[in-house]
Image 1 (tube, rainbow, N blue to C red):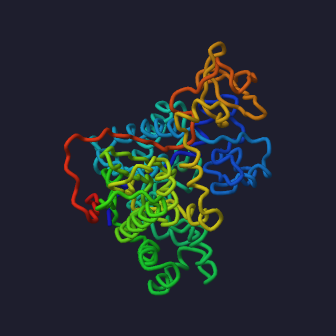
Image 2: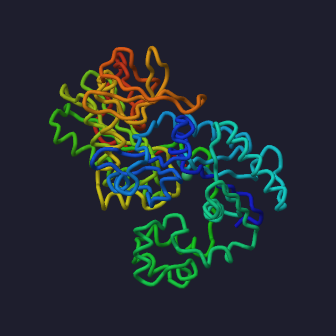
Image 3: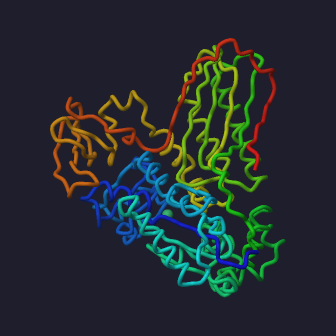
Length: 472
Ligand SMILES: [Mg+2]
């Protein structure tokens, strides 16, 4: 265990909603909800103004609408989030050679790997973080982050949550146990609503209660891997290091077939089995992944990959299976499939909370629908019926704006950008020839695709399973 507070955890405040408010001046200071807007949609992020109405992540969107009908409900612009995230990560990488992104809006930084020594005393360290936060705000057009610094990932993570939004908490070495013991158990990363409820039923409310519970009892309650790590964390024992390369590694399983597979039921079964094997390996390695990729090689050796990125990491088999099968459906497999693979990347060693547990209980395919089903294909981009609320558009006459709403053959656009004041609203026919989507940011998240041409004269792989796994 480290003896200096050298681990920094940074968490951008209400990230998706903050990016929307930055790019849509009329929404600044107003309740904004980003997530699925369909009947089975769920909230991904709510702005602080929306949280005042009790709106939370993972809440069904229809419930959020009931709580705050005048909020702006947007499907989200994953490319804009990804671009902004990479700006933040590069600001962090200027401060340290060891930066581990946990999700688009969260990262750990090892200050011991800083090119210029970071002051270890309280005042110097705080000044360092204040400057970092202001650099991030400058680089991103005003985004706020909450930062915690401590001797471990656990402490830094908890500290970053203490004064949200725009927080800054440094936990001095030796102060960890005093910080942890009175905290609610849900402050421990990995204890979300579902685990928290299990613990509450056996009378565990605080970290001090958790310390009194034995490891065996914890394992019986929440499973082996989760239970034994919770027992360690309850005592502040956390020597996990900041792993800069973890995000780019992946765990995957693929299979080449003797005879091309055509039957969609068989193909779906294979993808589901691969996805479950990937989950087994994730769990064995105590890792969580954010990006699910399906790789399909057709009879003519063209290789197609489809992937989608979730806002937060998961190791939930049902979610990963649902995503993988949805991705497979995006590939035309009618001519026969020679190779099929499923991979998970964007690996982290910590899950943010039980978001996906909750979603699975409530609505197994809600995220999949949001992340894959809503993905914009070139066909739907041409189809103006697909104007999603919040999507970036451009009008030949009126310039850049965003979709304020659509329906009954009309689409309403507000003409404003990050650099303008609040803009005016105009309504068009959905097929107005002057209106087009702007950039790649018009669709909801993350689904991406590549179709590689057939490699010439490459011999087929021998049949059999070839599990491949990125090393750690
Ligand atoms: Mg955040």
